[in-house]
Amino acid sequence: MTTSPSLPVLDFLKIGPSLGTRFPDIRLPDQTGRLVDLHIERAGRPALVVFYRSARW
Amino acid sequence: MQLVELQAVWPTLEAAGVALYAISYDAVATLAAFAEKRGITYPLLSDEGSRVIRALGLLNEHLADQHAVYGITTREEQHGVAYPGTFVLDDEGVIVAKHFEQSYRVRPTAALFREFALGGHADPPPDAPQVAGPGVEARAWTDAPTYRPYQQVRLHIRLDIPTGSHLFGAPAPEGYSPLRLEVDTLEGMTAEPPVVPAPHPFRVEGLDDEFVVHEGRVEATIPLLFTSNLRQTTVRVRAIYQACSPTTCLPPAEVQLAVPLEGLDLIRD
Image 1 (cartoon, each protein chain N blue to C red):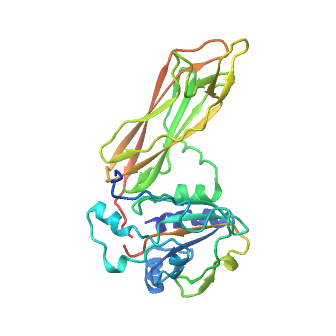
Image 2 (cartoon, each protein chain N blue to C red):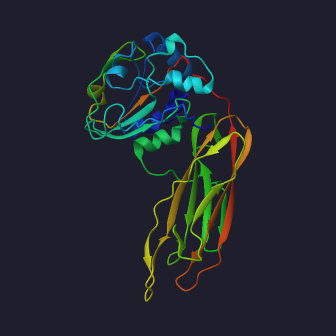
Image 3 (tube, each protein chain N blue to C red):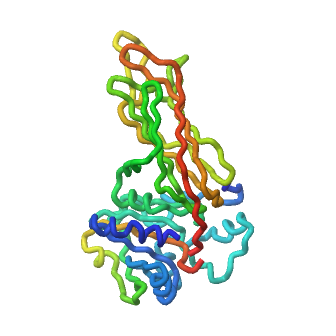
């Protein structure tokens, strides 16, 4: 795959929450419908927070 | 697809005390059906309406541009998708690393997620090809013995240099060959530039010029991207180098390693 000139090259260091900052507080339901508060649920553990496209496509 | 890769690494992360959350704009019912079908046991968080994705500045505003490049039209329900990527949080919740890809089509493997969370390099599998050249022993292997199209698969190259010897780094002194790693081109595979640890300065007693060298163990990686399923294939990598012992420099040499890989079909979800 080659990068086309029409496809902007994004600087992800400037997109989304910054390195060195605390990840924002978020509360979202999981696949069982249970509301998850990310930092409370983490309970002092390190974490991977993965954003992905979609489970449908 | 990366949700399945994450499931493969989840037991390791959980045992190491690392939490894992995967977030998309899908509805809870969609996630429930997917988790059931694919046996996902870690939390899939639903940001239906993309409120959090937007608030965090992660809304993919270039989806239509990306689709145009691939010659496909963006459907209405595809708006609201996030840039795909991973935040690594420490135990305080502070972001210590961000791993994002320019294209949503490129997806990390389980091995890469493991490394995001736990750091370090995985050891080669016992059957990893190895070869001995003048002044060097080399091994090569990939993150996994299989790949799927658009997965980011890394080729690992480990060079072991005997104590007291070195390989020239770039730039090498006039007339000497610096270490170079090259992957033979394959139709349907793209190799990115090799990631090689920086060589360090070296000075010979009684000589004026200083140069840079690799010593001990050199762990390099070459990111590979397969754009189609090549089925059973072999990735050939060559290390071109010149080794010197404390007393002599050997002539420039080359070692070649052939790493077998098996292609699997693309999983669309």
